[in-house]
Image (cartoon, rainbow, N blue to C red; front, side, top):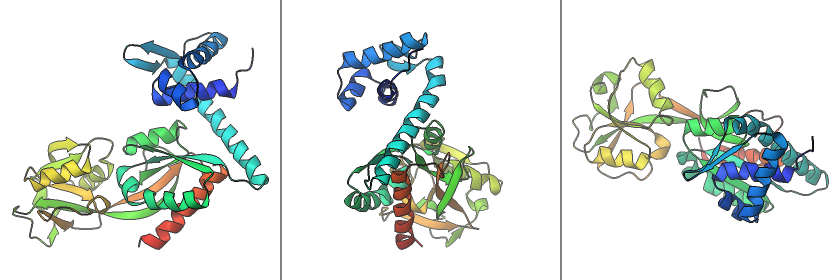
Length: 295
């Protein structure tokens, strides 16, 4: 069997990431015809179809899914080898792929990335933002080098805890409980709850379960600011992490919950021992910045 080139693997991986032959070509500086030829060449060599092409776009076949993990692993090791060679020669190159959640993207990453880019301009940072489930999936499939998650994760990763983020209760200004100094779970168990959608609600589910509360869920939304707006307009209450509650309206009342209720933000990877030099350097910057800026 002829050994396929890393270039074709990169093309296949980029098509899957972007869901389009055209977008993959634009990203890689290739024509759509060249991208299509590379995919066809892989399929011809392997003897099975790896992508379905239809009006709804590009989709992996079941066989394509089976080989994609190996391809991403090959590309990852190649990237790490190139970075190691550059490091030996006193150079800094590479790409750091990070899975992130909204609150981290807003509060931490802009300043960290600015400082990092100023000191390491030849290292490229790529971000993918989603919910907890998305980030864990990207880590497990090799789409990102590491990701920001809520601990504990649902999968077996190596993890580094970074910050405990207090979970707080939100009320509209006119709500009967808005003037309370502290809220018990008994007080809110019947209240209509506006919560984050599945995949972003791991922390809330955990603390409700720990306190034997079956919530009265009224709405499930994907955007934290939309949740806050709904609470402000009296559509229900919510429980959200402190990090997402910056600059909230004066019409919102934030009240502490009884007990110690936190989400623990951390980073996770399949292995921190084998990550590339550029990724290790970024994580060092991240931890240093957090020591200076968070308590």
